[in-house]
Length: 115
Image (cartoon, rainbow, N blue to C red; front, side, top):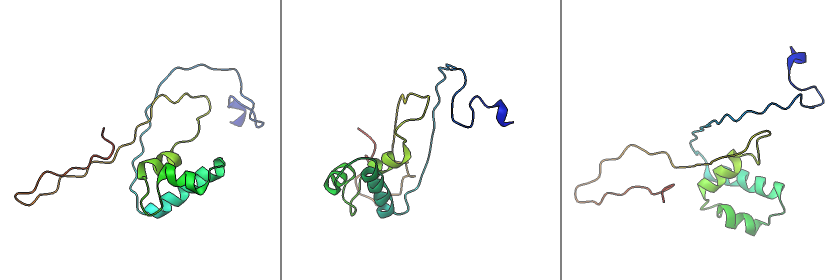
């Protein structure tokens, strides 16, 4: 079965096959710990570049008030996918069902991910 793969064990590719198919990839997550998310994103930033703690803090916010969207983007997106061109990236907060508002209150909605 392995001999039928288009590459060998040394990782050498077989003939170049050009495909211009496009795909959407969707991933839904629930953030359970913002501090763990921030720590993982900070570690990724500092291990893949010579960023200082101050640079990381500016990029993803401080650990006590992290930019959740930036942390998720850093962790969920690889630098590149071999053989592919990234065409688009989108991240938005999942909409929660509207909660009943007390009488006389204004309509408050999150604008996270909206412009």
